[in-house]
Image (cartoon, rainbow, N blue to C red; front, side, top):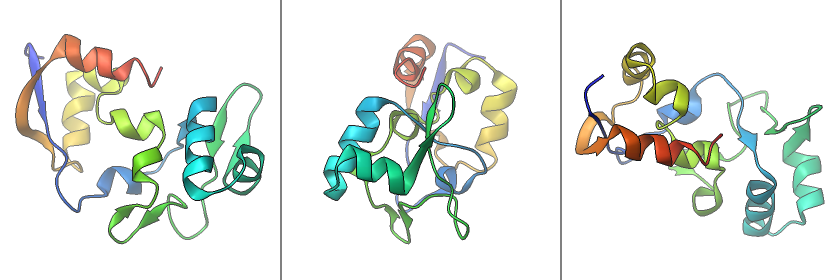
Length: 129
């Protein structure tokens, strides 16, 4: 991969939110999202998340990929989880030219916008780890 990547979110795009997979939450994500929707962290977790042995993740509803995805985008955008905030700068994508190109097939923002240095992209992705 070159010394940099280009990415700029495209207005109205929600393709990253429509992909199969799980959204993992930190405790800070849980607290922030709960506060944003006016619920206690405990109530938010009961309705929208669940814990595995060592991880916390959003539940996947039957009819969509995310409870918070609406026609115009993310209904909790100001409080969205770190995993969502740092996309596409996830370590697995930044460190693999193949995975970056694969993601570009559905993400119209990849290849657009200012050049972002690889080390900057890696730093952005550390919050997700």
